[in-house]
Length: 224
Image (cartoon, rainbow, N blue to C red; front, side):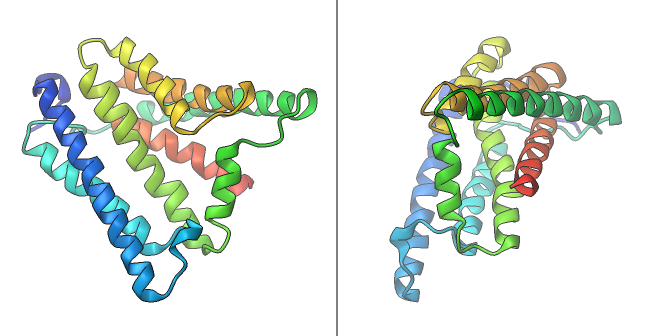
């Protein structure tokens, strides 16, 4: 039987403590990853991405989803998504990427902007990672986890009765989480946040925002 989130009304505090469980699990498993590196003789201070760090991070979210299910917090629907839904999400994301590309071009040519600090950090983190690990982390894991956090917990659940407000808040927090340092980087992260929020607002399907986020990260991955 379908379990749309519109029919599920868990208490706000339930949503908050379940998200708190995710943060705690992430911290514990991150510590476990560091301990792993210490015993393996790796330099855990260089912030390099590893298979075990990615898998442990994903495990934290999967465990949280399992807990959320038993608290009547539903992020996904069993109903089939039509091709029109995927097409809509794809078009919205491509338009957002196009707008971001124009802003990036203007920033590169008419300001001191060269690259976002987030991109510079990611280049350092993934410097020694394999192509496959980088792909799994950036294109698959990141969209899944980030969408559940920003569009799932925040917009879909906490602001379920005022989705438009959740759209605004989630877009701003998504942008802030990527640490913009100037007006160019601010817009470069705000625009995809707005696009992803708009997809959820229109379709009510978190699956489509994950799909659109995947498209965005996939294009960025192959472009760079």
